[in-house]
Image 1 (tube, rainbow, N blue to C red):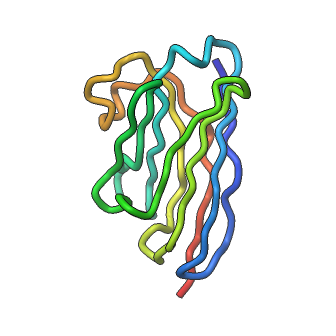
Image 2 (cartoon, one colour):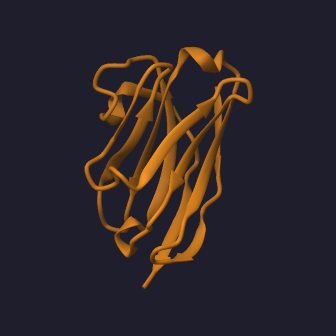
Image 3 (cartoon, rainbow, N blue to C red):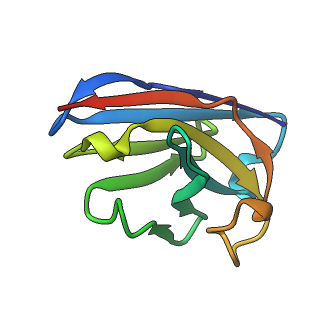
Amino acid sequence: VQLQASGGGLVQAGDSLRLSCAVSGRTFSSVVMGWFRQAPGKGREFVAAINNFDSDYGDSVKGRFTISRDNAKNTVYLQMNSLKPEDTAVYYCAAGYRSSNYYLEKSYVYWGQGTEVTVSI
């Protein structure tokens, strides 16, 4: 299974950005997809997760970020609105098979390479 994240970049506070994660090598519709992020000098933080029925978000992004998936395209998206400087991080997509504890890194088996998001003041 391979995950390819894309869409990162340099934006200003208040801007929007959409990240994409293309999945290959596995039946996409059967996996739970998640986004995590890691800011410089910090640990990896849960951002959002989605299965075929529901989605959830970390507290710091609720109301601003939206996760979605297109099973026909084997792709998961993270729409990020009202970006803040504290959203600056490397964003990783991940795939797993457990709908429980989806906010934990250990629930995911496959990881993408990360895409960098920088939000300037």
